Image 1: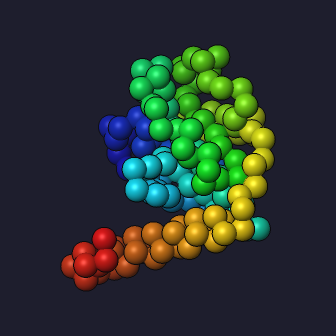
Image 2: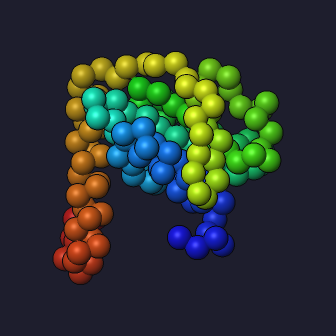
Image 3: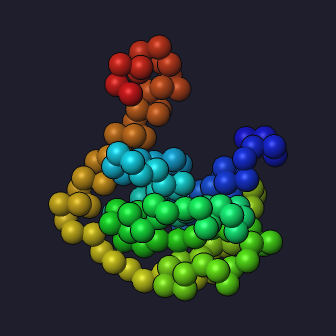
Length: 148
C-alpha cells in the first residue's frame, strides 16, 4: 500500500496490524449483508468478531448513516481514527482505536454484545468464504470471477 492511498485504507492497514498482534485475523471492506460494508472485520482465536469503522475526518464521520447496522454483526464495535481526529464527537459507548498507516493502539474497548449462535455461524462462514475467495483470486484471477 502506498502512502498516497485513501486515508481510510491507511487507517485500516494500521488497525489490521494491531489486531493481528492481538490474535485476530482481519478482512478489510467486508460485506456482512447486502448494503453494508465494514472497513475492518476481525475474527479472534475463540471466535469473537469485532468490527472497526475507520474515520479520517469529521465530515467522514457525520456522513456515515449506516454504522448502527454494523452492531448486529459483531461482538464488539470500534472506531479507528488518527491523532488529529476530534475524538470527542465519537460515541463513548463503543471502542476506540488510535491508528495510522504503521500500526494502532486500542484506547478503549467497547462493551461486548455477544452474537446469537445462528448469527455468529453465518458471520463466521461469510468471513471464511470471503477470505478463501480473496486468496483464490490472488492465485487465479481469471478463475474466480464466476463466484463474485
